Length: 197
Image 1 (spheres, rainbow, N blue to C red):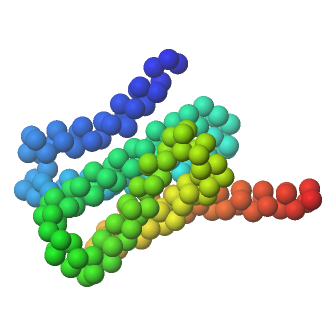
Image 2: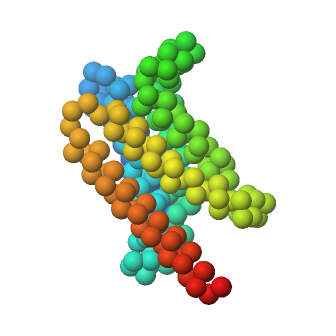
Image 3: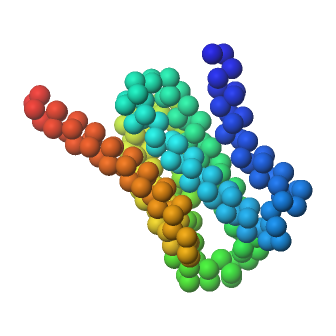
């Protein structure tokens, strides 16, 4: 369909629009900053999961058309993670370098989250065909760090939760299944190459 990509683009942007609308209409309660931080964070996590699920779903369901959306989903992961980071800096840290250093040292989950975001930056900047041509085989190696980022994001989420672990367990299980699938595919490919040699 001609309009598939624009529709998917809008659907990916919709959670951000809804979050802003809720903030502007007072639907986020007394602590708007906290809700914006949590809302943007959970959507960053979801889009990371959506991105990682593209290849397994494409292979398992024989849906090659899914591949055309992987870059968009990856860029939306970066977008929501960056919005999350912006809200953290604005509402939790108040753009104070002293508070930033203190929180980074005293709250491991924040340090892990910041490291995950920093690792996402080069992936977002190189998510284009020009970078793919320039970096060649190094491009694939760079973008495989998404799996390390996924582990860091899960650690960040687990550390952050204080009581109800149901949601975090659900997402971590999904991430684990995707990572196990990719590991299985990697070792199967290695065995096939050894057998052919």
